[in-house]
Each structure stands twice: as structure tokens, then as C-alpha cells.
Image (cartoon, rainbow, N blue to C red; front, side, top):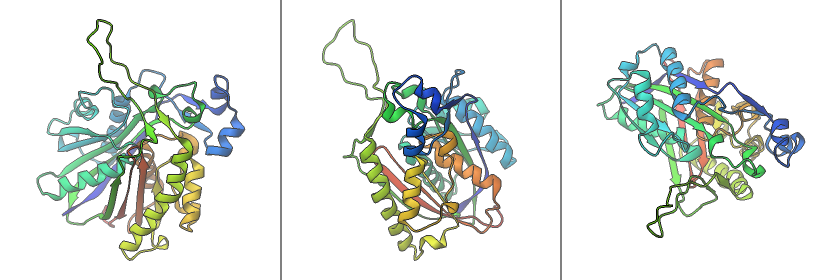
Length: 325
């Protein structure tokens, strides 16, 4: 038992922020941002939309494309590092918003690997035979966690969401996977809350802003990740030439270009949205999946999804889309 991809969707806030706008409030410029990241614009939530709102909107799009009703959904998984709250789960808010009356819902937090981990997780539930329809969503409002005085991080990130409806099926779309976590590495962190040191009337919880060690992240993404990709394919008796499309984390365009060069594949085989949307963390792969699905007939195609992010977490999925999908 496996699953078929019945529908996908993506959604971004309406406000577009240019490099020039960021340069007006911090010490940077368009030329530096484009040359180092390949990012031209990003969509930022400035009209009160929180992560659950983006997730709800992309869920509705995927549901419509799948031709199902929200009441058909058994399971909702939201991957996010920018949840509305610590509790309730963002997925629970989405479940309410879309009227998924039969579904149970929960969040996972594996940063930019989130969509890969969510799809792997949903596959196991659907393969059990107990559940028929799963909604997986990656949604991020990264902007609310940024320090807008920190040009080394803020210029990279945007807000967005992507989703997929997976329906249990005899055909196994997910052919192979390899998921990894290195909990020793704190090159990326966000939302840290300190424990108390005393009881005081002035105590009030507060979180830190997003932080990344850009150089360390770049070295990891351009060395460890492509080696992981080659090893993963080799374990399936495949080479990069056997893959029709690669959807990797949209960290920045220079990282995607470096990965393509390392595995000796043309950029035409890589889905790219970071230039327009910025780094949308876990949502980038989900959004790219929908963009590819919307412009290409994926029947019979072989896809590789590779995520990497805080944790440090990283992993890949090998998908073969059935003609009946």
C-alpha cells in the first residue's frame, strides 16, 4: 500500500518586498543580495496573515485541485518552525478552518526539511491501511521571527505555504527515502526561550530572533547535501541522470546552482522559486512541488525531493509518479 498525489497547491501573501526596500532599512544593496543569493523579491505577510492563515489558504487550493471535500481528510500534518502558537498546533487550527471534521491533526518541526519529513510520515499512516486521505502542508511566516537589523539572515527569507493531498493507493509513489538528523549542530536556531532563574513578578516569556551561521550553512548545503544525494541514489542503483526533476530546499539560488554542479546536472532539471519568493523554509519544496505539478505532466516521471535545515536535519525522497495520479 502506498499513495497517489491527488492535488497540490501553494499560497503566498500579497505584499512583495524588493531588495531595494530592504536596503532602505539596513546596510545592504540589491547588487549584493542578487550576487550572493539570487533573490530578487520575497512575499511578506503584512496584512495580519499568520502561519495558520497561509496554511489554510494553500490547503483549500489543494483540496479543490484534488476534487475532494475537506470532510474526506483523515489526517493533517503541518510542518512549520513559525507556528501561530506553541499550542494549539497550527494543524489543529487548519483542521477547524477548512471543516475537516473527520481529521486529526498535528505539527512537526524539522525546519527546511519539513515537507520531506511530512510526506514520509503521511506515507506510513496511509500504508497502515487505517487512513485513506492525508493533507500535508508546509507553511512559514518567517518574517515574524526576523531581526530586521540582521542583514546576514533577513534578506534571505520570505513567507509562503504549500500543500499536497495524498490518497492511499496500491501504487507506491514513494519508492525510497533517507532521513537524517544531527542534533549536535546549532548553525541555525530560532525562538529559544530561557528557563527561569528565580521567581519574580517581572518574569515574562520571550523568544530570540532567527539566527543562522551563513558560512557554515553554505558549506553544509554544498558539501554534505550533494554527497548525501549521490549516496542515496547509488543505494537505489540510480544516478542523477535517472531523475527527471529535482526539488531541493530553496535556501538560495547559489546553493542550488552549487548542488547542480556537484551532481553534474543541468539547472533545467531543478525547480527554482527562491528568486521570486526568497527562502520560505519548509514551504519552498512544497511550493516547488505544486509549481512543477501545475506546469508539467508528471505521469511516469521520477522526482527527487531533498530538504536540509535546522537540527541539522536533512533527507531525500524518491518519487515515481504513476500514470493514474
